[in-house]
Image 1 (cartoon, helix red, strand yellow):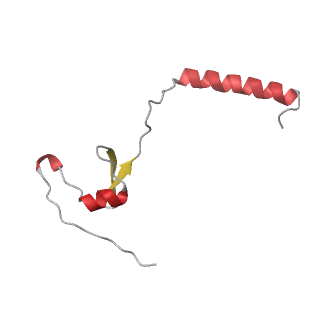
Image 2 (cartoon, rainbow, N blue to C red; image 1 turned 30 degrees about the vertical axis):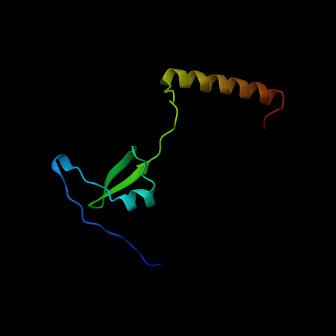
Image 3 (spheres, one colour; image 1 turned 180 degrees about the vertical axis):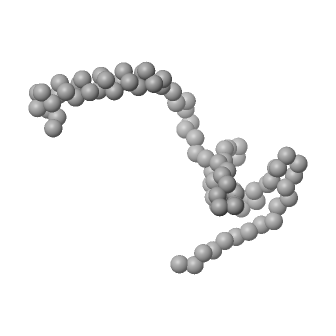
Length: 86
């Protein structure tokens, strides 16, 4: 399989700002406005669109997770005793 790449030359502005060419943004699914992930990989920068959920997601504290897991284990044990779970 052949590797195919497209390239553009862009200016690096003060504070490291660059403009991703419009056709790249459109083809690769970068939303405007939106977020992107940038990472350093093998001496190159990789920029990819970042998808976000359209609603807030609640964060759980470790204690809340432990309580949930404990209740889940208890419920599962009860269901196993009734032979409703393997």
